[in-house]
Image (cartoon, rainbow, N blue to C red; front, side, top):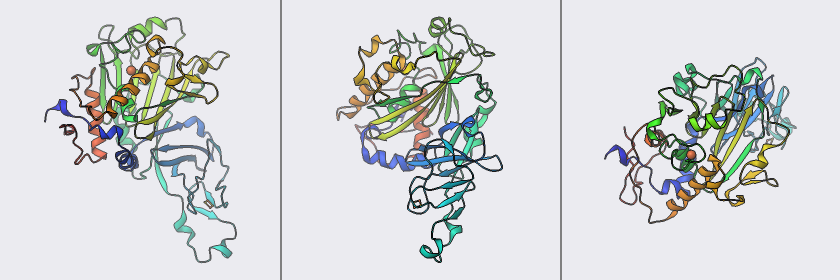
Length: 396
Ligand code: FES
Ligand SMILES: [Fe+2]
């Protein structure tokens, strides 16, 4: 089997049984972005999120460290913490008011002696998860034994332009894209350097495969444009030209760091000279997902910029392709072009006639998709999943 045959089978993108298995096998040991450390300024502050099917939360303890737990009450399983906020010194379940310390220990429950005589409180602590912080970005993993330092690897020594701690940037409106494609279709598109010069000819304007590069950092990756000489820039030359009127974030140079950071499997971070966005893919079902994006910049003007995002529905606050007022290729918005294309790919994958072609070679082409498949296959069993005569063969 040659490297170019390294593919996931069609059913990995279309089949609900596969999706259900993937939810367990992949996400039980996957790091997901949950929020920023500045959201957790003082003891008792909480942020909530999920890694696949695992609802999780992070709390700042009384002694100042971050702790992550499964957001599941040990009584009857209700989600314990809601949204982002402060729990004070105790976490109280709204269902029957079981209460937990910031260390996860069960403190008490109403009518304990009457209703739970003989029950062992010590065995009913919240289930721990793992937490790690990289450049103020907080990641969680349902597996309490997961090793953040080995996952983030040497990336922590890599250049990074924006310090969200110092408050030099303002958070803008968050965006939710509702997409009719499997989350892996979107992830593969986001790390595909081959399409930039073609699908995005009028928005990003490239670069072609030999003028951009993805670097592999374990399961994670960093992308650079190299379309202006040998210098690695965070954005393509056309974007630098188009946005030259914008003030860069003070102290940030145009070069010297990545343009897109991909944190396997579902987190994308785009630090540009003008701001920062952090996006999280949320799988919903086979062939359906959402992208949740938070963004920071020097200023956002007076208006809620979401109304200018193609496909934005002010009633639901969501962005969908069926709300587009013009053809995606006429919007000049590369994210709209990507969503449009991912939904087209999903419809192709849904056809029983689908048969994959070869992936292009090169770190500025489709090699990153191979790397994605390698990481995926380490966690999700592909046994017996050949289809259309093609068996996946993650290079190993
Ligand atoms: S489910 Fe939380 S107290 Fe009953
Ligand atoms: Fe794209």
